[in-house]
Image (cartoon, rainbow, N blue to C red; front, top):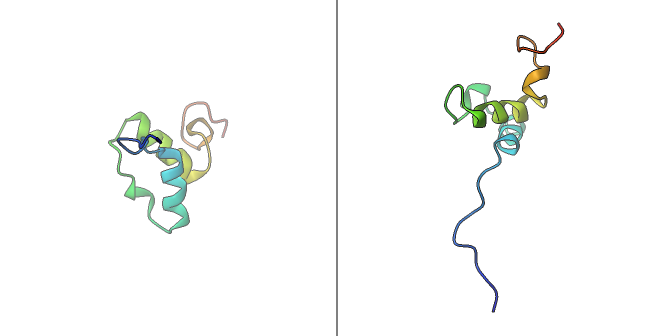
Length: 62
């Protein structure tokens, strides 16, 4: 007998952000709250860069 999961796995915000960009959605379409880890991850996926490599973020050299 096979087991059926009771729920879907949690969403991957990085993959969701990348998919949103690929579908042409605007960056402000991020569904996660401001200052949340999920929002940072979603934006990383959207931009294709870790948060520490985006201009204007701490740790960025330029």
